[in-house]
Image (cartoon, rainbow, N blue to C red; front, side, top):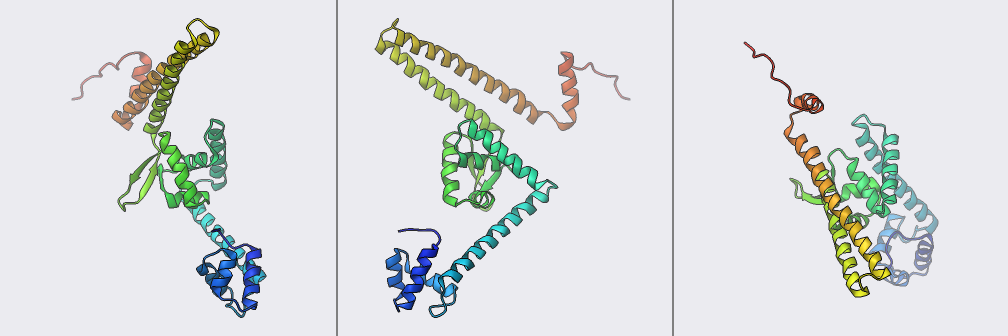
Amino acid sequence: MPGGRLTQQERQQIALGLADGLAYAEIARRLDRPTSTVTREVMRNGGPTAYRADLAHRATERRARRRGQTASSKAQTAWQAHGRDTGAVREYEEVFTTVMMASGLPKMMSRVLSCLYTTDAGSLTASELAQRLQVSPASVSKAIAFLESQDLVRRERDERRRERYVVDDELWYQAMIASARSNAQLVETARQGVGVLGRGTPAATRLENIARFLDFVGESLVRAAEQAREVLYTSAETTAPGDVTDAGDATASGGTEAPGPERA
């Protein structure tokens, strides 16, 4: 059964059916639409005696434009509430989305991530994402499912028990570890091929080189991710805001700062 908005051709068929005295159920059957869809369409646009296909179609387009303008106005107000340049933010989101697509993420998944990362809270509900991106909830759900499988977002429930989709620093670490696990599987599979093809043969040597390369890269990736997590995130959590400059100076000088004279 088709879904979505009625087309202009379908509205013309409704008008013809009304002129022929057909019941709403019969018109709906011919259109392969629910009876409620036809009933709502007719009653919203003048009733059975005043229904006109062209007028109904234009009225629907006007309502859709008004809804889009209202949603856009709400989103713009939210950005401006922080003193941001709405146009600059949207342009940046497009750039961010394009870069993520170039890295291999599908477009919808890239748009969702860009939206989440440029939100101060770092989290949004499905309805908020759908409104900001002007897409269907089903598109958001599909994108979130993919991003979760890649450890790029996680789900939480807020105080109102609503499901929220969250991005934070920890997710990048998880994504790197997931990438390392994927590398490890490739290494194991490549080395299995060495035994099958015969060690020393050109094909087996090629697979062995792949395994050695990916093994080295995978181990380096895990070490780098763990070091970055410890240095960047752990220190940020344990260092008080007022101690940042002192800690940086101490690191730059290669040791701890000498104690000053005691205060009276």
